[in-house]
Image (cartoon, rainbow, N blue to C red; front, side):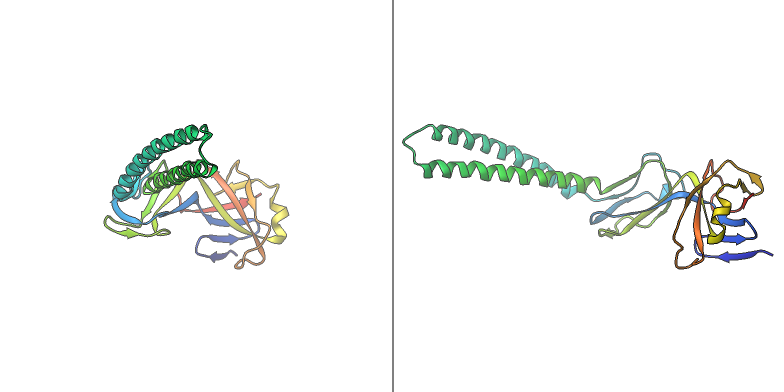
Length: 235
């Protein structure tokens, strides 16, 4: 007799050392917006396909780019002013007739400009980071779902798209705690065929749903036909 347990992410059946699980991608990703902005490009053509350094979603960064260029120009002006004020201080510092107050006043000008330069450098790096976060490029993962369309406005934390790593597969089953030691040194059969895969991970704490079982994770190389049901046996 077989007992089937249906859950949101997995179907597991236990008969002696026999289980069933759905073959899932090794990793699944939810890519969310790091910054706010208007969607100017949503690549619906790549949905359901593997990416190849493909732009998936792009947010409007035109204002950020203008601000970045202006900030770079301001940095040049600050550098020029800093050079002039530093030279003035060096000359003033060599004049014995000048008071300590005058020298300190000139030194403060240099310090203030150095502080302004540091602030501008931080602003430039922040703008670069913002611009880079507005263009989402997927290297090679499978694009499962694109959640936004052109002209949508997103805020930080908004789901942009979902992607999956199909380079390997993952099987997750729940094994009764009393049987964990028993399966550790056994061969693993998938759909009745002996495999060379090993147990990748055993979680030593039961979750709130399967309170008397530990989750066991198996990694499948050269995985094919994801989302299909796989019979797992330990012999």
